Length: 364
Ligand SMILES: CC(=O)N[C@@H]1[C@@H](OP(=O)(O)OP(=O)(O)OC[C@H]2O[C@@H](n3ccc(=O)[nH]c3=O)[C@H](O)[C@@H]2O)O[C@H](CO)[C@@H](O)[C@@H]1O
Image 1 (tube, rainbow, N blue to C red):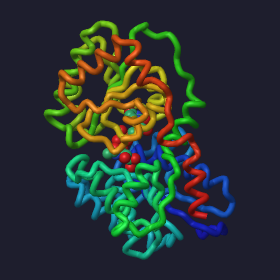
Image 2: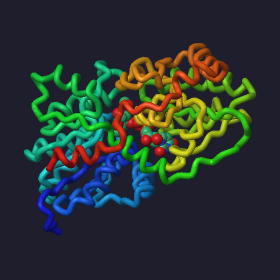
Image 3: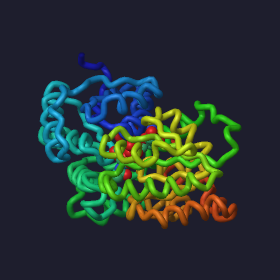
Image 4: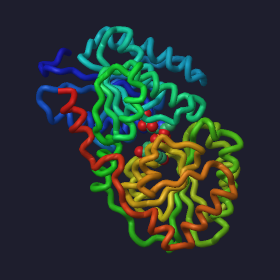
């Protein structure tokens, strides 16, 4: 049904991190009487997409019809884009908002572009400068930035990346902070952080990047086993539902008494676990942004990061996927209180929780 509000925005998204990072925009837009901001789910993730929305009291307004599953990112993008285009022909929003670097985000931008609908890109300008790592995310974010009319760079560093591509990036750029920090701070204020526990240091481990599947994840699991053998840590590992990840992780880590494997945690439980962690080992982009704000050191299980701001603020350290290197760096942080304290100072390189307001101000 047509809305009486004057500016109609449609977010197109399909994965857990997009749900988390768009939720604050949807909530903030709901407070602005002349904005109508709706959410269209592509179906890339099902429960994983809906769960964090529920934590914020949200549900998708529209769901694209299911497309045939296909493991190829390129085919997935085309199928989502075709379905999104049909939806957009009906809806005709004033602007499509996409977030980040997923196949859903790229498909949403492509569909809007084909119909001449303006595109806003939330979290523009992140770069690893290597299409193969992470694939397909680097390709997706580069292409979305070329198509976008409004580009919301989370940091001055990501704005510099966009300025460097000024010959192909044509839209207007704004530095806004990352909406993931809006979500984190809102959720952090709501979840109780349990005190007490086993008395052992909590290490949170997550890994799911496509480029680590196989040997990389096996090497990460090898490191987790050696850390668990220390005897003074509990490792909590929420396992990503991608079977190529979960199979390996369960096979390697399923039996160790100091390692707890869970399914993907709800967002609010993730925030609670990260808040009481001594150390986080992860290849997640979002967690690299969240942990500095919580003052929890992160060893990044990748060779590159698009978040140099967290390295510069001293909260993140790149360790790749070599077993010995991961163990050595983790041992150092667990054994050396000064080394730990140096990486545990809360820092806010990705914003202080007002990114959504800045984005909506720019759109208005
Ligand atoms: C290459 C790259 O860096 N790409 C990123 C990628 O996403 P990612 O790597 O951040 O993805 P995940 O790790 O899946 O999600 C993370 C979120 O999920 C929460 N979480 C985690 C485990 C769990 O058990 N339960 C949870 O609730 C966690 O706290 C956090 O908020 O796409 C985004 C969207 O476009 C981009 O923004 C972003 O560049």
